[in-house]
Length: 294
Image 1 (cartoon, rainbow, N blue to C red):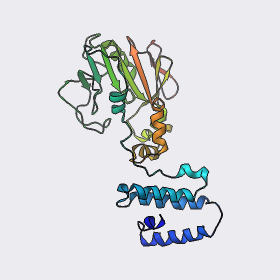
Image 2: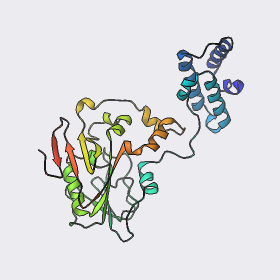
Image 3: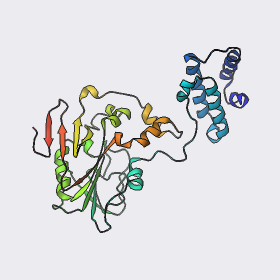
Image 4: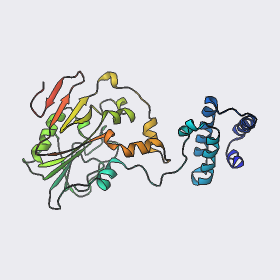
């Protein structure tokens, strides 16, 4: 096992590694913090080195070697080095392939803010930015379905024009989400909203992006609450969790995310009206479906 691994290391690293292994074999003490800090980069280097992605046996050997040098309570720190059979489901994939929708074949469905990942069941698509925008990194998708260029705060549709209105990952970008939700419930008989939570924006480092997400969300009973980020909360938090989620290798954070999507995104189904509360960065009520607000 050691031979297969060390052959993947450059000369200096191999000599250092062999000297360390010899010293460890002559010692009975449990691996300490220094050992852990040194071993983990070696395994990461193995993963990045040429050919290892196609060598499952070598990856398993590397992990096995690492675990033999760690106390049991530190095993969770070791990378799994097991490639995923498929990526973690994206928001679009989860919504379109996993979630169940009570939408009849005859229902007329509108997707507002369709962007680069339009809702499959939508008959009509609508977006404010058919061209490039800082609010979207992927190109706009126009796939032959009827498309409207709209301002969500002033939708050009009659009252109750749609049986179902879908709006995902839009509210967090708006200056006036309350007016947008009034418009959605005006033109639709029922619908669905999805908005990132505070946990999502923090862990995925969206707080660092200026003029991107203005609000985060939480559901309280049947009320959708949008809370404004304040400037002291906008900071660079690092991309460790985002990179872990996107990794081609299995890791505990991917499992946590897939078990707890509801902690990352507020899913809000509504009928006839959207009960909402918009709270400013200083705690003031800016808008609400009941009419309370500045």
